Amino acid sequence: MIFQFRSIRFKFSVVILILLAVTTLSFSVFTLKTVENYFTGQAVSKAEAISRSAAASAAYSVLSGDMLGMDSVVSRVKASHLDVDYIAILNNSMKALAHSDLNKRGKILLPGPGRLLSLDRYCSVIEQSNGMLQALAPVSFFGKQMGYVLLEANRSLLKRAQDSAKASVLKGLAVAIMLGIAGVFLLTTTITRPIKELSAGVQELKAGRKRPLKVYSKDELGELTRNFNEMSALIVEQKDRLARYAGELEDAYVSTLRVLAAAIDARDPYTLGHSARVAQLSVRLGEAIGLPKKELEDLEIACLFHDVGKIKTPDYILLKAGPLSAQEFKEMASHTEDGTNILSKAPSLAKYIPAVRHHHEWYNGKGYPDGLSGDRIPLHAAIITIADSFDAMTSTRPYRSPRSEAVALEELVRCSGTQFNPRLVEVFVKVFRNEHEGFMLSELI
Ligand SMILES: [Fe+2]
Image (cartoon, rainbow, N blue to C red; front, side):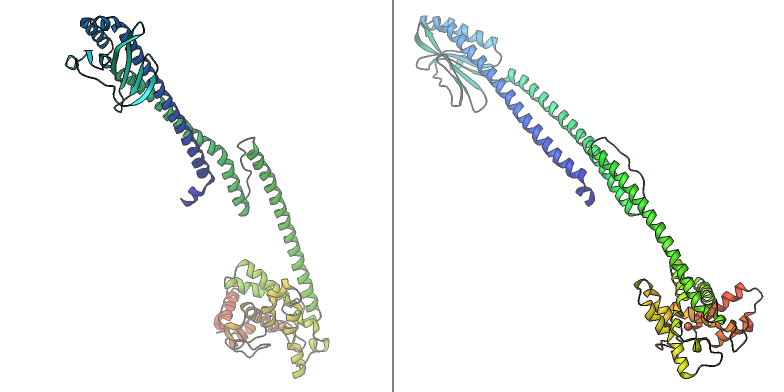
């Protein structure tokens, strides 16, 4: 909901609707005021015309004191004009000589207070606080003023026409507002639809998906969408190309490592292919304990590297047929730290250091180089230890014949919990039992 309030469409709609409301209301107020002024003008003109006509008609009767004539004038005016409330003929002392209401004859009548709407020497009109118009026209005969005609008119007839005109204006206003709202909806839809499409396109591009965005118009937004489609196609193409290059680079990198590992193994004819076999065994064990694909790839490469430090081990020690002296063993054992130093030269290889450095640690802490024990030994190193030992036992050595897989497994089980992680040995043995049909695990345990 908050997002909706913050959307461009919402803001755009609010601004346009406010402008629309201010414009239509201003126009309506102006129109209604104009209509009111027009009808007021009409009413004033009518009151002036009636009072002046009555004054002209009554002049001779006033001069001659003809009461019947004056009564005739007021009764004709009252009968002819339904919106005239009363009409009176006054003498110069404002005394009613004739009145449409007979009860008021002989009384002094003074024009009431009000807003002056019209004034000239023939007539004046005021608007009283109750909205009635009061007209006062002098009665003259050859330039001599003899009295006045005073009349009061309501606006009942004109009011109906005025109300009808106001209703028409309000209807027009309502139609204008509805059309305006519909217009705002269409306008905001037209403008925000391409923006929404662009926003969705950016999100999809970020997520790695790409589809051509729909172009809704031929204006600037349409041009922007077309440019976005071209740009995203270029980005996706470059991304695919980079991924292809990265894949090729990784393949080349792994191939180089295999060659390097093979070269190290080849120094000793008895260990030819050792690193590749350790990698194969380790990956099978890693798969059995459920390591994810990426970790299995790292484990395989760590295996290829695990004895890279032996590149510094002299041939007379590496190739020695008999048992090593204490000094020779120390020098041979340093291949784990030498391997660490070699890998630390390249930041991208640093992640393999734990496996390479600790693949000769013992589960009981009596291994080297750091005497780590139990679960403090990195998992990859603990896996490589088992695979390394298994391959060493089943390979030919200058000083002994290869042992059978059954015997090697038996040795792993015997050293489980001392040299090797017992949980990993258990899985390793099960993997062999499953993969080598007929093999009797009971022989081992
Ligand atoms: Fe080693």
